[in-house]
Amino acid sequence: MSNLIGLEECERLSVRETHDLYRRYVNASQVTLMTSFGFGRELVDRAEGAYLVQRDGRRILDLTGGVGVLNHGHNHPRILAARQRFAERRRMEVHKTYFSPYLAALGHNLAQLLPGDLNMSFLPNSGAEAVEGAVKLAYKYHGGRRGTILRADRGFHGKLLGSGGLTGQPHFDFPTIPGIATFTYDDIDSVRAAIRRHDGDVYALIVEPFSASTVSWCSEEFLREVRRLCTRHDIVLIFDEIYTGWGKTGELFYFMRHADLVPDVLTTSKAFGGGKSSISAFVAREKVFKRAYDNLGDALLQSTSTTYYGFGEECATAIEAVNIVVEDDYPAKARAIERVLEPALQRLAKQFPESVSHVAGAGALWGVFIDGGPAILDLVARLAPGGMSRDPRFKAKLVTCAVINALYRDHDIFTYYTLNGLNPLVLGPSLVTELDDVQRGVDALAEVLGQGLTRLVTRFVAQKVGSLW
Image (cartoon, rainbow, N blue to C red; front, side, top):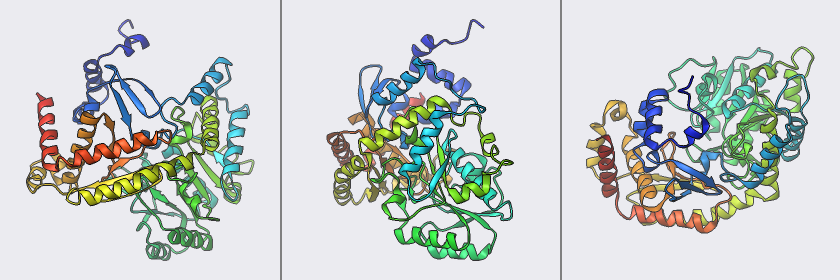
């Protein structure tokens, strides 16, 4: 066993050695894909707040917000202190036959912050588990007498077999749960038609009030009418706010901008763990939860879904993360970021109409929809290797990647684009990001777009070809 890699040796691995281990033991194609960008060819030494520091000392402004995870930024000092406190006091992690004060307190805090009688929590590890737990709860609420669940054609609910089938993506080539039916996002007539089509058989409807993966959202009128329809037909209404929770869009949760609108179940994860804890939750209204699980025969049924339910350090971290959100008013921080991003991005769209079709967003989550470019890119798209040529969005993805690449290489700014919808470039800064840094990101984007998409793509492709040699 002498060839095992220890922690100290791991931390000394070069980027070349890391790539080699990925190729042999993780996924070789992942290395090929990610080394298209500068950030695939470097290793991060440390991270703090909104910044990454490379091993060579280069500082990178991270405007990805950890894809929803880092509302608190990297390594928030209070989060680190909470985890250190837990470790130093040798607290017990998890045991299903002991009660946990951490789990109890976290459940209390969630109930205090959420509207109505969203009081009953379950705390698994990931967002996909929270979604599947919520769906399982809805099915049990109806005692298995109904067999249809409605999902939108737009959204992202995870990549497990059940949650993957519920995600509004066209290419999920795996088996999934039965009875999934689709309605059109933000189209109430489509919901009505789906309910009529499956008359009396719908046990749940799941929707993202704000779709982070497509940077679009449901209208207030749609959400209120969906609530009314679900109440009338006794359908369990699930709001998925795994990405958008904990202040990201300018409210604690996006749906809470609409007074007295309460789902039957809410799912959350990502920033819930403060950027350190792998934890999620689904929170149910009392009447739904009690009918499903609040009896001696079924009281432990939901807890069999995950070994690490209520893991002590994860709950302690989430308690601190939630308190930081409230005490430091993260929704207000997101609204302040919006006051910088919205007008600046709207000006950018007007300045570069040949490159940017539109911008959209809320709070600290905005999408820049980059399209267009020279006609030669249509030929490039048709000649792309493998299955890429069959992707109708390949050209848009290519130009967006070229912009991301230039932002990183020339301006030390880290962004990403979504794989859903129209694949916007996303500016989703952590809520601890200074407003001057947010403005710097927009200014850099304007400078990059000013170079023209032809030049950006030519450079990006040349760098990619060069990396293969």
